[in-house]
Length: 111
Length: 112
Image 1 (cartoon, rainbow over the protein chains, first blue to last red):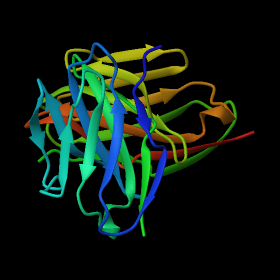
Image 2: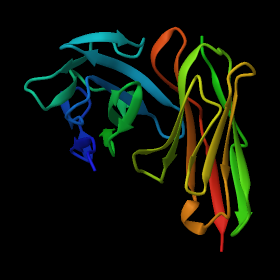
Image 3: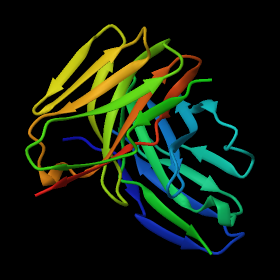
Image 4: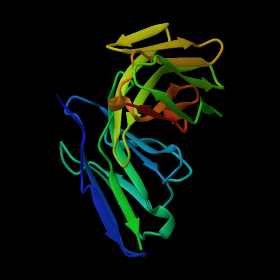
């Protein structure tokens, strides 16, 4: 069964460092998303991406964040200079007909 | 702004019981509603999707209903098993946002 895959599963980084989280969406899906979940809190929307550009972003998605689809299969989230409060589980999702499928997540720990 | 609330926050039941999880949302202009399962420290597994034009969807022991006009959905789990223990999340798509808005979830524990 097709699935969204994310790498790495866990990343530890020092405050101020750049991180890139990687995702391979389901191949025939056209919409891609990043969400995050801070421990004990709701899953929150960060950004959606369609037709090689950002279609929507939340207030959380500031200039420190960027997304890219560098080739036909990968979708990445870059955090330019990580802060302690960026520690969270980051989920990639892709959708068709507004039915979203999520990856297993990347747990980002900023120390 | 769309808000999604799930009640109860936690639920503990003995194995074999039928149970209902509740989800409410403030803006009835939704495209669809999804129920997810999340195991501790893991990703989100999509369980059921109900389109806005539908009233319910069934998958195995799970049945989800949607009453869009009252802003409510329920997830019914029949004959619960210890393996059903997880957090169940409700999320709505649509309204003014083109993305999913999540509730905080109901943490279910099924005791053997």
